[in-house]
Length: 126
Image (cartoon, rainbow, N blue to C red):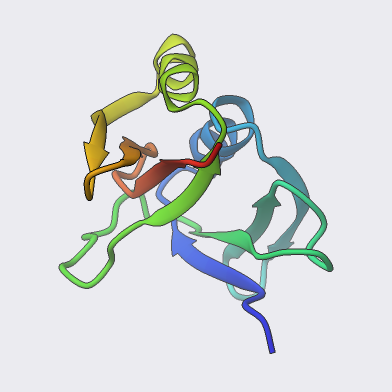
């Protein structure tokens, strides 16, 4: 068994796709409209779905905002250089919500936010 994807609902698919592809450097792997259900699914990731977990962005037509609730935490991404990763997000108009900072004594982390306010954690892995 392995994790295939994590689904999040987004209020503006184009803004979300721009964030995940242009700011975080993921690729749009596939996208499909479902007119009968009035929604669109877009899958983004750093590699093919056959090789690793990806994000499924679900856009329900006409829904512009969701309450994130208290159950969702974050998606974590490994980065080689956390300072450079955060600077890159900020330079592309993204929001660095926390850090970079040392956590747990030796691990560098930071949190950025996507257009809907979902948290994405960067963890530096050398």
